[in-house]
Length: 205
Ligand SMILES: C[S@@+](CC[C@H](N)C(=O)[O-])C[C@H]1O[C@@H](n2cnc3c(N)ncnc32)[C@H](O)[C@@H]1O
Image 1 (cartoon, rainbow, N blue to C red):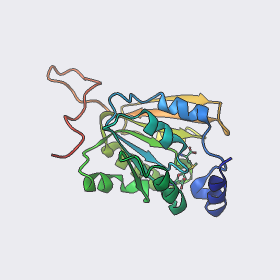
Image 2: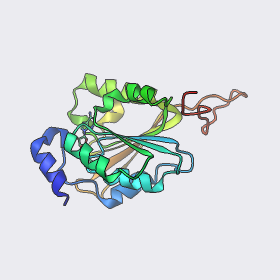
Image 3: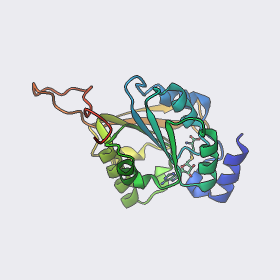
Image 4: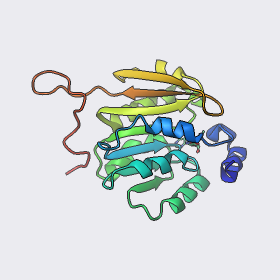
């Protein structure tokens, strides 16, 4: 068990919401939902001690970027230390709610994927919906928001997304619903929807 994880849980039980990090099996399963060949910008909400972040960084393209939004200062310091040698990774010690202003500051238009481990279920309804809206706007057309949660109640609030696909994953303590919310892709010149469509660049010119 990660000692840092347990200590931070004792300090902020509602924000951390778990006494152990995700299992390696859950990490692999979440990573399997991502097309790393195409992903240029990935954001992660609530990386904690970085169990998913390390897997993402291992699989990412050399020119991709990973933005880690972590509220807890001790986790953020530890993540900054772990990724000090990886120029693709940025640790942002801030609320995930700030994603759009953080993207603007970095000249990034939108993300291809946003992964979330934050305990949505404990957020008030308004905050939950607000964060979902910010997340939807921060994603490129065809991009995906991937969450792992003990309950699947977020589905009823995520009405902006074009689709949602869930699975119940048992190889974690506790078992988790993994849900992929997909933002609608843009229509191509023929009027058909191109699921591979992306903005021409994720970076502002
Ligand atoms: C259950 S832990 C998950 C940690 C890690 N992702 C894992 O799978 O083991 C939740 C993490 O989300 C962070 N967190 C909670 N609310 C947040 C928010 N609004 N913005 C950014 N991080 C948040 C907590 O500090 C904690 O590190």
